[in-house]
Image 1: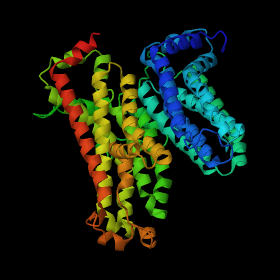
Image 2: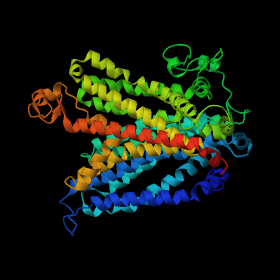
Image 3: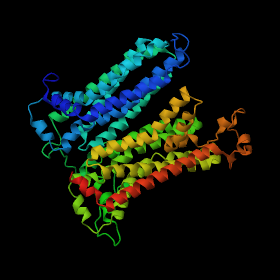
Image 4: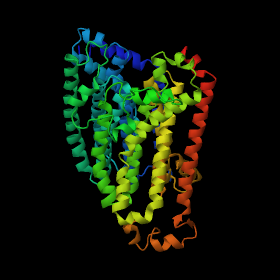
Length: 564
């Protein structure tokens, strides 16, 4: 009943594995991995050297494994977050609960079906990594230990996503909370694997005992939590949509309580309107800000704020105060948080109108496409930027308290610009995807895919090129393409701190700072050009996407797409 004759598992497998995108994703995944091994393969001779390049082979296997691990951490929630939340959105949750299938069988079927496609991708990559074994420098036990870590982590990530789906009635909320929980765990595992690369036996022992044990414990715990929620469902009797009383939820909430009439909560969630709108008020913006954000309760917002702040405290202490040259890493964390939280408030701006079948009614009003667009954009941007700004204030606090930052005010200003542009880009890309697609879940996943392609793909290609082809023209082109990434822009902003000045051989010391001819106001010209390139590229992209949306709205392109 759990695996062999599980109707939930059989139905989900038929739906997921028979789609054309499954085969296309498998092909693309294999081609990318094969290309990585092909281009990183030693080119200095036809004969294989079993002992001459062990470090190179070990780095290749680590790169191969860590790349797969990060991809699996990003892909697992997209497959599993909608397993139960999707039933609630399709109004089939109660029929599933009323069936004679045991809750354990339902959760098991949803989990296995969601991870089957990802498991196929992982096992299909095993023959490719085995090609690296004849090069030497890595044993088959390390490869098997790496895959044990990968498989146990993927199962745990899938269970986390399914559990989040049981607490939320929207796939988008479950997806965001899943990412917020999973990514810190994935980063810890990546740091563990990379830091112990010189201690092979220790790394294998931890990989075969600690990581699978912790993953199994968390998976089993969350499995029975999901089963308990399905056995005694708190949202039963409302077609899978939990009826939420905000006052009652605030009284029972553990930890953070959001109060719409107090600062700073009113910045992203103003109180409900009790008077008539003033003349000239954009009704779309007012409706989105005062009604939509709390339509499904405050659980997702409270979890996002609390988890992000808990993670920000140690990062702030290490990156901004103890090891001040690591300040760009904290900026990268703030940008990453905005990437995770921003699309939720914009990816459903237009698709939710289609899903509620209110898009045609909205088009017949006197509201212009310009008002509709900027109302949707600003409402989502305001919420995401305010939530992300909660993590930015420690940067200003450090600027006031740490003397090293007093001479780096232009750099702090550049960090703020990078943060603002990344918030704007996230919101506009999400709104653009919401305009194109018909479902909120599809729009959200497409938004994440586009943003990760813009922000992380150039960095990965640049790292690969600088590692294996440092002096080629192609690597120079790839390095130039990193202007699309705010992470690259943050790390290219010059930051002069005490550790840099104390190093006489460093090109970043104060003497070189003010006497270098290739500088402007003491800042290296190449770094400033990279920052300017990022700003120019981001502004151009946002303007192009916004004008494209405005043209589609004016031509009523959305109406014809709704009827297809």
